[in-house]
Image (cartoon, rainbow, N blue to C red; front, side, top):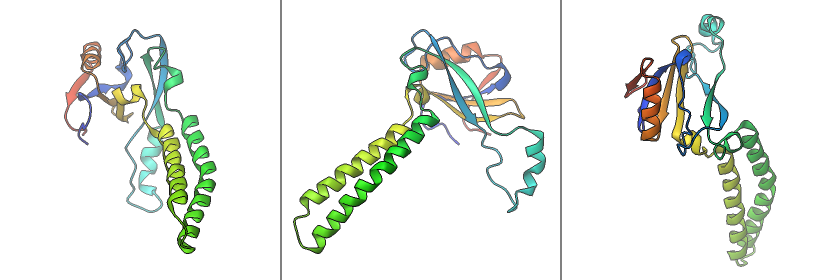
Length: 189
């Protein structure tokens, strides 16, 4: 995987990683801590249907998310982070709007069937479709901290964390703090 956006990818020792005491989004002094989950990319595929070939690695290493605490300012802090709750609320909103969307779609089909004007039903359907899209975008669009500090992968066995940083100043501070345990890379191994 290449670094598509951002300044660069750093490979850091997970047990030694230190974050600068500034916000990754705006570079203000840090006043809050947010937790960010990193999921390992390993063991996504299996060579057998029963996944029996993964039993040994599953027993040797605890699977799941690694939680990393990142200092941020108050405006980009814990109230302004995409959480599971916000994603679930977005899906609930989408599903609630699904039924009016179907109603307006049926109105559009009815207008076609009876050769009526389709302008109003089409406008209603498109507005509902746009609102449904905005609701899902609210749940899935990465917030400012997530756009500027993105954890690509974690490997607990190798004690490695891959970090993509979006701002040059934060990249320099992060590299300075972790110079003994970080290296710049182009491609994740």
